[in-house]
Image 1 (cartoon, rainbow, N blue to C red):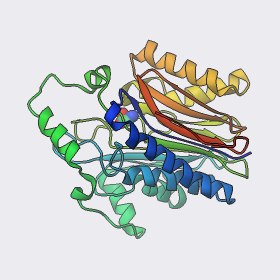
Image 2 (tube, rainbow, N blue to C red):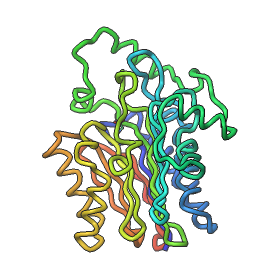
Image 3 (cartoon, rainbow, N blue to C red):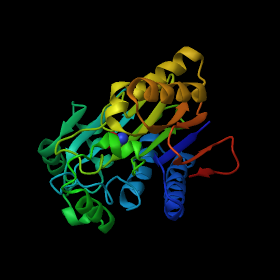
Amino acid sequence: MISFIVHGGAWDIPDEMLDAHYQGVKNALEIGWHILSNGGSGVDAVEKAIRYLEDDPTFDAGRGSFVNALGEIELDASIMNGTSFRCGAIASVQNIRNPISLARLIMDKSEHVLITGMGAVRFALENGMQQCKSDDLLVGRELQRWKDLQGKSTFSTKDAFKKKLPSDTVGAIALDKNGIIVSGTSTGGTPNKYPGRVGDSPLIGCGTYADSSVGGVSCTGWGEAIIKVALAKTIVDQMEINGDDPEVAAKIGIDRLQKKADGFGGVIVLNKNGVPAVAFNTPRMARAYRTSEMTTDIVVV
Ligand code: GLY
């Protein structure tokens, strides 16, 4: 059994943006599936699929990310190998085109799990990764959103999610031919966020978790709430308790997010056998998946 699932955010995705979200997650699924079905690793599948979503300006990750209160783009990402338990993450990093690849570099080459800001950029440069220009990440839609939000002192990220403003964090989970579960997540965070603010996506156990003996999770939504319920690890723990049912675990996780932290968002889940599940409490969630037991892809927004 091999299996692959991706997401491109959970929010009130408007009708005119449905096609872009559909195509984005469909193409990312194809990239990951091609790697896995040719015997490639889950780490490669997750990294390459998320790179694609980071390059697609539709999503709040890499190019197309939200802009912070100072007019900068600060990126968060993480990746975890559920067999070796190695993981890598970056937070509040500027001028890196593909944050998921820097998270992977940290997983592969550093003894640390999470490196922030200039330290992460330093690690990238030391290991041959180039910086990009801020303009390579900025798109007109987000510049305009940032301009519209200036001077609105009452705006908070919680309001943003309650009003179903965009939440286009991206993520992927793979089960490869060696039985290794890998999860990854990448985001530009929340609109007009306080400089240095870190959400759930780079925090292992919150936005991302993988344990090949149980399963993997990647989250999207209001990061402050997701952190409070350690959503990704909560769902993996639920699968361990309930005998591998990813759907029940995903639903319990989203219920807990809403009841305990008043949060909104969505999760993708694979259990250790590659059985996928999705849960969200927003109007829509962009996702796509395939397993070796299926004859066609499932792509839904
Ligand atoms: N879930 C992404 C964030 O809140 O930063």
